[in-house]
Length: 129
Image (tube, rainbow, N blue to C red; front, side):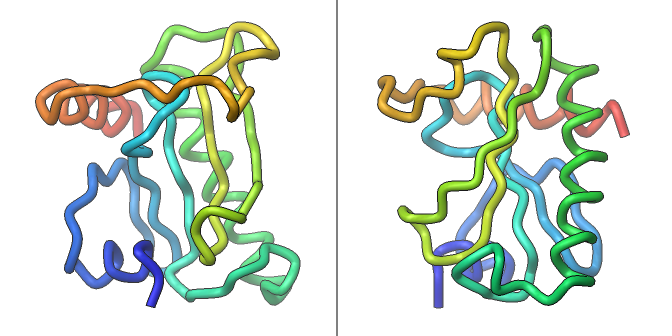
């Protein structure tokens, strides 16, 4: 069971910004920027292109809805999208507020926020739905 499946099951806490019957979006605990969100299917699949077509397209639409809320909540030029999938073996889309290309550089040092700061960011994003 992946760490994301444990989050879905409620075994591990997360700062959830959006949820549907099939998908979940929550703040990354090792973010590249304030408002860095992970969007996942609730079905545990390792590789994005192994998703069935309905889940794949549903995930993309859900990510678009979440990205729209992030863009309204966090000052940025755009919300960048990345799918890497090597660190957790459960499909996830990174949505990262960005102002320049380097903001999506995953080799950069990750940021650290207090639980209170994460809650405030989560609340800002949730308020935009």
